[in-house]
Image (cartoon, rainbow, N blue to C red; front, side):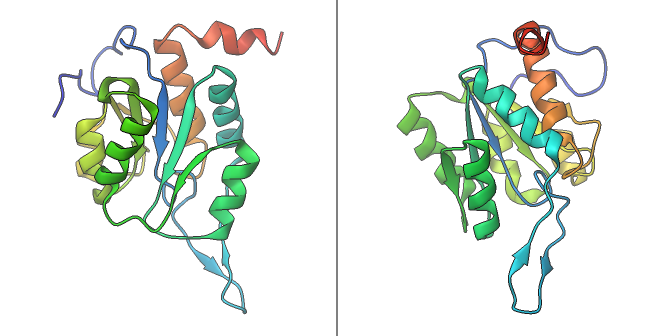
Length: 181
């Protein structure tokens, strides 16, 4: 595990260096983890609008976002396109390998990366990235590995909460608010 303050206690000061890349798992983070199929077998997922708003705020701060998920779904690709997420990796068996390739492609290092996860397949990346984040209803081991645990469960505003937390710790929140005043 990296040298991060634990979740309990006072919140950490400014995150240094600033996070440039936010990586998300999908099922259980951007969604509530439920998978619904219609009569034709098509997958249906529910996304929270505030999570989308948070990711748009992040992008407007000239930050990157990526999705790395173990499942594959056209719904995820459509949502990523709506939100301007350029890096989407689906049907991934080894998230850590994709993570390493992505950092090399973008010229970033671990310290410049945050990852939001909810379950055991997320742990290898969370243990390596600069700022691991868990959703409120994540597996116990994932919450224990996190620097921050969101106030909300996956699919219910957890991503927005994480983006706001990151922005405040990087002294970017006033830039976000200025757009709305």
